[in-house]
Image (tube, rainbow, N blue to C red; front, top):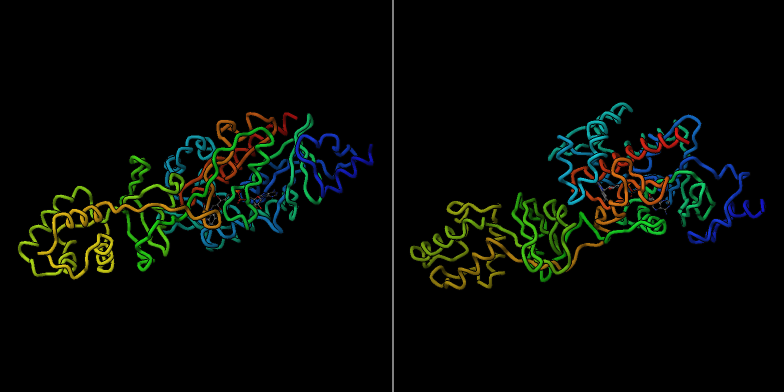
Length: 449
Ligand SMILES: Cc1cc2nc3c(=O)[nH]c(=O)nc-3n(C[C@H](O)[C@H](O)[C@H](O)COP(=O)(O)OP(=O)(O)OC[C@H]3O[C@@H](n4cnc5c(N)ncnc54)[C@H](O)[C@@H]3O)c2cc1C
């Protein structure tokens, strides 16, 4: 029997699926495989949870699939790591779509200020950049990661890399975690495997499978914080043009959302914070309406065009539209290149004379300037999405502890949960705050054991 246990612990190339594993549990002699806490995933949520869970005499193990921890953290903020956002933490709650409420105890329990204080205490100051985004003063994600790894080392948290967890099973004593290189047992388990965006960083959705096997529901998964591809996109040549604070309406049969934000024309569609932050709500086939001129200026625009046609009938429409910002201030700067393209999109030649502008043409142009309809052909996939929308159903997780309501001793932290934040540091703050909240509960669990 002991032989069998040893074998189960050492040679697990063929770790069985959950449920079939109990018969192969390692025995008490395999103490090197037995931990008080195992955390799957060495991203920010897992590392921070480990650091804050550590207690004297406790054995904590982090299993990481990649050859080193924190691959995604290293590319965050283009390698500069927009670690959190400035301002009142209450204001964060609105930046997580419909799920801010779930994060309330986590964010209020460990705030943006607490996070800044933590890193400052370890010698890494923070700076505030445009848009109230907070970055490490060195502008190096590596410095953030190094502190987390160093803390783990100092506290005695074991991090095993190249250990892709293949299966997780629960028995009466705790959890059995199977990897290619071995098998580990623990009383408590944290799933901190992230979402499935940028899968090359190691976060490829494994946590959804593990949580599902353990009985959790997984809400619909999709890319979020992602650019959009637009059907018959008319602005490829204007790629790089950006518009601040543009009004954007989203239609799926009827209007479903309205918001404002900065937009960027790409080669194949739209990006910029105003698109990325809303992408969690957008699906292929939806229609976006962009306002270059405020909708409430529609009448003024019409009156102005009629008036100009009467006075300047011989002038080209294009040259007249160059004057538009002075008479009917647009929402966003209208460059000549853009106006020219808007005329083409509206089916008009740029040398069309004002006198030739019919009522139908005028109305079409006004429609497009006040609300240009663009059909979303698709969202850019996981290789370009910064986060994943959907994940472990939050109703099944206690928001005050991050402990599963279904499986005792199981915790879920970070992006594996059905929470995704806007750009601006919200996602990393959520990863740290949920990791911290779970750690508080894990410590009490250690004490009570
Ligand atoms: C390009 C890019 C830029 C970003 N920039 C920012 C930013 O500036 N600010 C911000 O707030 N957010 C940013 N984000 C989002 C942010 O990085 C994530 O939300 C955050 O890293 C999530 O942390 P996490 O710990 O939950 O998961 P992750 O960071 O994804 O870590 C999960 C870890 O689990 C490991 N893992 C997965 N499966 C297994 C398995 N089976 N066995 C063992 N290990 C496993 C993975 O290898 C990974 O190391 C960015 C994301 C991307 C892709």
